[in-house]
Image 1 (cartoon, rainbow, N blue to C red):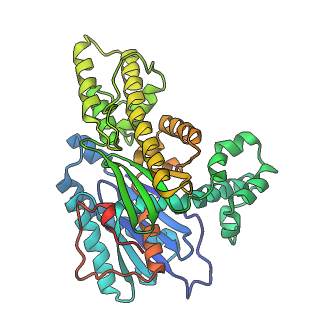
Image 2 (image 1 turned 180 degrees about the vertical axis):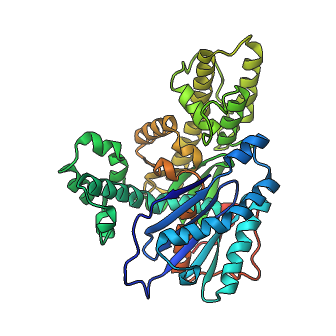
Image 3 (image 1 turned 90 degrees about the horizontal axis):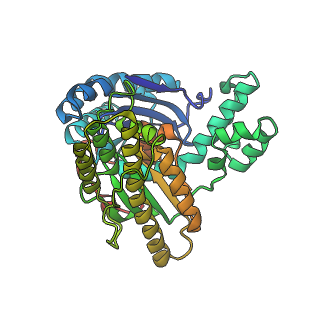
Length: 429
């Protein structure tokens, strides 16, 4: 299944001296590519998922996922180039590719493809990107840009004009100025629907705390600068996203929403209709005073409850989902607040932003509770638009753009993927 995001800006006619960067992402089961210009504007974003393959094998099989990447990546890149308005990859200035962490066979496909593009075109710079850094930096740098552009598209739609008629998007990205213009045209309801509150959230300045929550990661990071990260807490076993998906399979609801719906999303939807205190699950590692996570215990507790029940009707499933989700998020809140306080104690009160990213960051229950907790602690919680929470080529391209602008390059001949590539091992820029 291939998802195509419409270009946020058509390239100008005067592109002779412009720089364009291709981002490639194949670290897990999404094949993605995106093209950005030198100002960070998204010209195209294409994603091909492996829903059917994963459903058939009841999970991700690395060798099969890599084979699917090999089949899909050429088409995804071609589509991204075509949608961007470029004629061929030869017009690119750089290619950025996720080189870790991730599944080794999958990383290998993306790395080989990016390397070949640069070897065939020596003028194109080659950049290796850490997937986790791409997550952290993408949410920081792109959240206001994406929300601003979404409002611009709505503005032109309401006025019966195509969005491509806007010649210079940059001047509209100043959040408060844009909000002031839109207020004159749209009702407060529509404005809130289009993430008005997010738009008014200031862009985080270093240092800030990052909570990365996804199917493969669950960690807290202190971001002190580009390439300068300190790991504050990590999962000791399962990630929260993995726990959500396993609980969904445990309850037999994975396929209830049809194709293209993660188990985590199904859990979230069912939990919204349930009683979150129906089952007294305990908060994992409640008495530990560190910032680490653990989700194997609550997953086991859920399994015990399921085995005790004679039958699982819809209401019981909803209550189980709600009770599980409350305790799973309780742990995130406790650890994140502790990490933010630790960061303030160490770095001073100039830490005021919490960036929450990763696939689980699209969970609306998590967003609401985390925003409330951050506000109580004098912090601002920043989330990306939900559609950009999952793996995508834009985040890789954005991280590559920052490194390209600073003159950094990698050697395609000696490039290697790193299935394990901790953030804290990166060199500060």
